[in-house]
Length: 449
Image 1 (cartoon, rainbow, N blue to C red):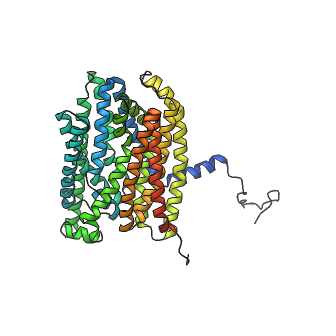
Image 2: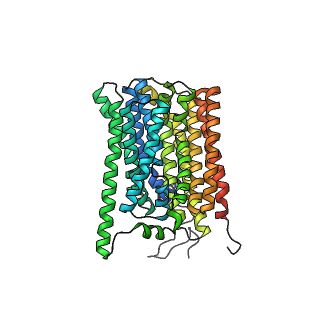
Image 3: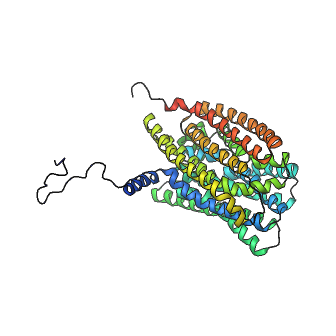
């Protein structure tokens, strides 16, 4: 009504805000609120808290343990981070993908799958790395308990209760910080106490998670006057054959190739480089890789279940576009922060016991960014693709694993630890490209739109 600010305004009236008069601080606040409304950013904050535990625990262990002892802890953590996510044999993906409830049937099947994987990781520990029997036993127990914990977190993930889900699946990172503090207090240089504490953390978290789930399920059943769900009911609610062994093993194959890539550096280093390089990589992962890893895990945790509930192609495109825009800003800030903070952190926190040259930091940043891009592409495919898509991607995933192994080995031989990490980054980009190409048909607008 009053387009000209220099005109008189009647008494008691208020001039409308003038276009362009919003202050920069107000604009920043609005952008921050809009960004915080994206689930992946909120979950990133939860993962960041766990990342502090992971980084802090690793730095404490690296500072107080001899190189050989810390390398053993890092190797055990790598094996457990391979066995624990793979322990459910794809059941956690089906649980999150189809929103299964926390039933006794789901727990029994999870424990069975976890026991099978415990045998595998035990064989890897004995035959591949000649671990002591006690350490192998602790790794096997952590694998079973961690598998149960992973599926409990997936139940909450499928409900889009991301806070509870992250609290369960990231509890081991807080326990790692506790292990570091205990090692500082003991000051005996032994790797066994932190390994035992990490295992106990998996067991305790699984007990808490499943106790809460089963009590909640039973209480709901009693309140509604019905029985707890059976395997037949769960299978029917998830779409029939989606919980069959063939379908679950396909999801397990996708998950296995994913987790194998996560541990590619730790599993390849002992084969082509001195064992001390594994300790160096542990420090590198804590300082540089951890922040980017937290963002990548947040993306994987939130995008798939949201896409599963999207009703239209436009809604799918909106979800991915919005989450990707925020993630690219955050990953850029995290990369710059890692580049600036790493040198003084090595000097003041680790007393220059480790050397992280700029090329090695750059390689870790490149690998972290590649993992975030892969998380978006794979989550988009897992949230939209059909059974045939997942079967094809399972095969392509293992092609990317083999390519990564070759690139990492070649990079390690020719360029040392930095070359190995750059090789792994190339493998992640290959995985991201294959998933994106397969998922794009689910984001094409139909002619009617």
